[in-house]
Structure formats: C-alpha cells, structure tokens
Length: 490
Image (cartoon, rainbow, N blue to C red; front, side, top):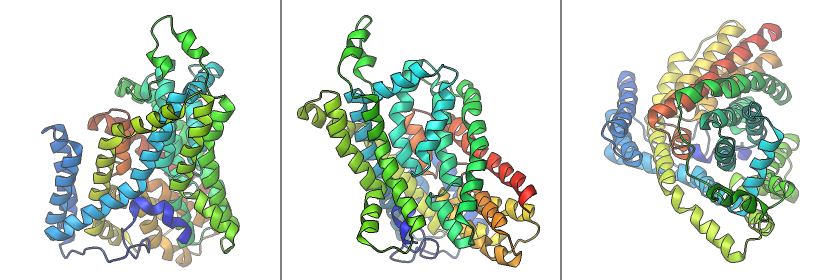
C-alpha cells in the first residue's frame, strides 16, 4: 500500500482503518444514525443557501457549513475545528500544491506561445465537429496515468484556448475533456482508487485493466462529446478571461504579426506537456511489474513519479524549453511565474475549505453509517454488482471523496468475493462497479466541484447542471457497461 500514499494526499487523515495513513485516530461521535444523516443534509443546505441566496463567499460558506455539520453530528467544537483544519491542510498540501504548480505551468504555456502552438495545430488539423471528440481523447490519454486534479490543471489552458479560438461553446469543449479525465480516474488502474480496490478484493490487475478500458470507451463517448452538445445549451457561459496570449490580445490586422513571432515548436510543447504524464506512468508501471523491488532505481522512479515532483519537473523544464522556444528572457520567465499565482488564491482557499468540509463528514462517521446499513448483502453477480455500486454511491455522496468511497466500499464487499466464490472476471467487475459508483453526484463537499466551478467561472446551479450531471452520467453508464459484461462473464 505504500505506493498509494502520495496519490492519496487529498484524502489523508481520513481514517487509520481505511487508508492506514492517519497519525492519530479521528474524532468519534455517539449520535444516532438519523442525526448524522440530518447533520450532513443541514451542512450541505447551509453552504448552498449562503452562497446562492446570501451571496457569501464560498470559502466562508464552507467554513460555516462545516461547523454546522460537525456540531449537529455530536462532535465538540474543538473536534469540529480540528477535523476541518486537518482536511483543509491535507487538501491544500496535496491538491493545492498541484494547483499552484499547474497554474505556473499553464501561464508559461500561454506566455511562451506554446499553448497557441498546440491550439492552432488542433484547430487546423481537425474540423469544428471533430474538436469535442479529439478533446475527449486528449482527456482520456492524459488521465490514464494521472490523478484527476493533475490532469485538470494541465489541460485547463488548452480547454480555454481551444474554446476561445474555435468559437465553440465552452462546455462543448470542456465536458468531453473532463469526461475523459474522470472516467479514467474512477475506472482504470493505475489510479489509486481502482488499485486499492484490486488489492482489497484480490482481483486480477490485467483483467480489471482490460474490462476498465472496455467500459471507459463508451462511457467517455456518451458522457463527453454527446452530452457536451446538450449541456452547451443548458450552460451557455462565456470563455473565462484566463490564459490570454499575445494572439488573443491582438487588434484587428495584428494577428498575422503576432503569429509570426517566435513560438515553441509543436514537438517541444507536446514534450513538456507529456513529461509529467510519462514520469507518473513509469512509476505506476514499475510498481505493477516489480512491486517488491527495493533497489535504488525503483526509489528514483517512485520519487520522480510523485505528482508534485513530476509537475515541478515539468515547470522547470518548461521554463527552459518553453521560455527558450518562445524567445523569453529570464526576466520575462520570472514575471510569467510570478503573475500565475495571485489569480489562484481564491481557488486554493475554496478547494481547501471543500476538503475541510469533506473531512468533517468523514470524521463524523456518516460514511460508516451508510456502509453498515448495506453490509452483508449477497446474491447473484448482478445483484452484488449493483449493491457494490450503491454502497460506493452513498459513501461518495456523503463524504465527497471518490477514493474514500472506493476503498471503503471495497472493504465492505470483500467478504462476498470468498463467500460467492467469484471468478477473476467477477472480481474485476466488482472493482469496476465500485469505481463507477465512486464518481456519482459530485457536489459541494467535493474539492473537484469547486475546481470546476472556479476555473470555468460557473455558478453553483451551472456547475450542478454540467459537471455534476456529467459525473452521474459516467457513473450510471459505467454501471451499465459492467452489467453488460457481467452477462457474458458470470
């Protein structure tokens, strides 16, 4: 399980029994189960009301909603505050660092002209109708080895610039990319959730990977390009005023001159984008092929494959490759890096507070209540697969963490693998059913919800109608795919 530790940073401190990473036991409550569920509902309602009706800043709303949830659930004021700050710190220390590094890289990509090169190449090589499909493929490929947040911060500049240059609705470009990232995160190893579930349930990695890709392909198609056409009409928002380049700022008649300026080559830009992807993929593959290797080589590969290190390397390489390719001076590179950080301060606070709220929900044992209510279920494979999905759904909705939902649900369903004498195919499908359930209904207790909202300048209702519905669609289509394969696997 050591290989999961760096990737589970956003969920760190959840529970010593779930992840085995907490230094101290989490707070406990003795409130009745009904009160715990009421506490979660009141906390969520408080956050939504404060943001939408009172117009309070999301950061303050999340802090207040966390306090309401903890106190109603029977946690003391001190326990509630401690739980919130632990969650805030874990999220800011994990996802927050990735956001900061990603913002720096994105600004370098934009200021050097590298993003222009990628976007112009995509637009010139593809028809307008094909762009959503290409972006879905890009999201899936980038998302294959990468944690969702890492892939998101790398692709946000490309999403925004493709939408701006092509004149296509933002959601028509963003949704396919996000669908590719999210489906891979929940369904395909080497992501931490599926890998942990494989280990707990004892599924075969190769079989799970093959079935996962098979399920992910139609899932990305339906929840990505096809749904993107629909949601573009539901959520018609302007392209955010982020990552603007010299070409975007050019006045009529100046565009040709701007394009003539020196820019990094397509190959060099693509290399800098894919570098962290390759580093993390190598680390994951090495762990799979040689899990017991303790050599110095494996230590180096593991170190380079940590998301923070991989992105840091991408930033440093980008400063040279993109800066030199774009004819930027050292002063201009430094100015680009400095200007990337002020704009994400609000995003960091909001995402951190979302992690704090999630941790209060986890520490109040609301997820455990849901787990115990459904534990012990048994029956034929379709029944087991559906209830495995349902367990993961309920824990995901309650806690806001796909990783926690996956690992907790896998632990609950583990005895059924032995009791029902499941085949390797059945065990693999059980992992995928749990993974699909872990993506369902991302809402205000999920840090990813706030990332999407803030990056794309959406309101809460718009985020619910686009991102949240997309996640539900991925979850349901994923379950259907698992069920269909189950008819042949048995």
